[in-house]
Length: 156
Image 1 (tube, rainbow, N blue to C red):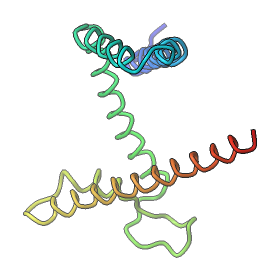
Image 2: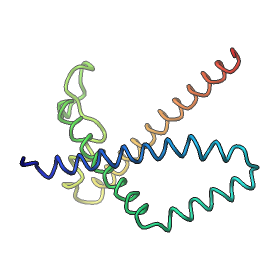
Image 3: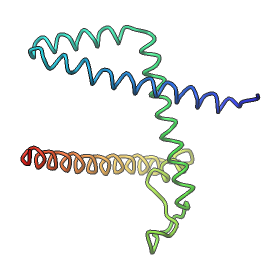
């Protein structure tokens, strides 16, 4: 059986992602439940100890930074995939179903060709606009979750 390196790398990334998800589940289920039973000072001391142990472990650091690189690669891949699906059209679309161009696609497609002072600065400004839009969406989602959780707690 002849497998390509991409298939092997994707399989390893999926395996490590599943392992990381399992560790997150175990941590949130058991460790946080135990920390809830202690006082605030003991909980802070315990978390500092866990963080100091994890940050000095080279295997943890390798996995952490490897996951960061994989996440960056995934974000870039999704940007390119969305650019291809949407249509990569530089005009303002007359309909939401017409080909369009996203902010992340503008940054990804034009950053390597940006020359002068203003073009790279404009692309960085687009990145800041993209971060601002992401922040607004996340704050709205947080508000929605908190308002619905208050409604659920009142009903209970």
